[in-house]
Structure formats: C-alpha cells, structure tokens
Length: 171
Image (cartoon, rainbow, N blue to C red; front, top):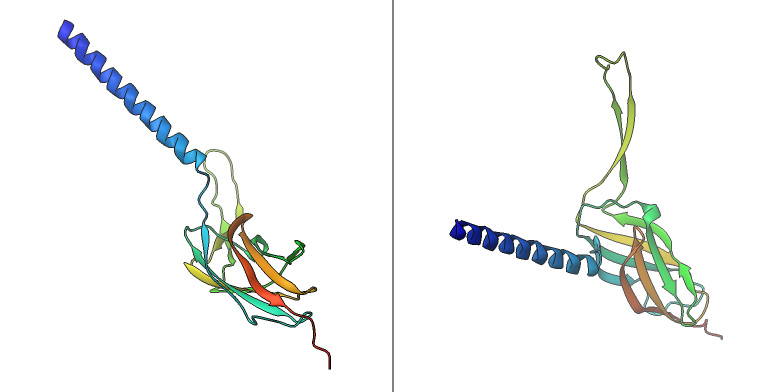
C-alpha cells in the first residue's frame, strides 16, 4: 500500500510540473505580442528625387503570412516629412487584388418549430500570398520622406528616407 501511495504522489508531482511548465510557455508567448499577418519585402518610389509638387508613385511588395483578409479601407501608407508631419498617401490598387468577394445564401424551412425562411449575405477574401500595392503622394515640402505601412490597423513595415523632394529649379 505504501508503494502505491508513493507512486501516486510521484505522478501527481509530474503532472503539476507539466502544468506549471505549460503555463510558463503560454505566458512567454502571450508576452511576446501578436504576430503580424503581413510582411513588407520591398519598397520602391518611381523617382528617387522628385520635384516638389509632383506626384510620386510608391510600390510596396507585401507577403501574406496567414489567410487574413484585407480590403482597400484597411490599407494605409503614412508618409512623414523631414519636419515630422504625417500624411496619408492615396491608395491606388493592389495586384493581385485583395478584395472581398460577395456571396449570398438561402435558408431552408424549419422543422418542428414552424415554417421559416432565411437569407444570408457573406464576404470572403481573394487568396494570394504576395501582392504589390501602389500608392501616390504629392510632396509639399523639400527633404527626405519616410513611410510606414499599416494593414488592418497593424504596422507591417517602415522605410526611412524612401524618397526625397527638391525645390523646383529656377531659370
């Protein structure tokens, strides 16, 4: 009987140790923060030194790490000038396009609860792993401009000194 009681106590200590280790690992994962669903792989402005007041087109290559869906309203490119002023670039498009597909559904007649009829409306995302998003921006002041890309409210990449604006030359 004493041997059985000792074995039961040893198993309980092992289980308690395993549960404790699981809580430690889970706590460390939670403290590390959420993983980003997107990652920027390349930034490119259409002109390295645009004239102040001309439009700059900015291409951003984005890799999709999960099956999270985005739509144009959830993509934002913030541009910061040399003075620290932040503006938002105009979104042009993403290719392959990330958009929400619309779908419709109909319910069936209910059983044992009377008759019923239902109608459903749903949306799903176009799936693709990589996309190139295009933005346009017109610099107002001279100097270097930096960018930050936000998707679904999370910052997924930033680039300092992506392009520079110069004053117009005088004849």
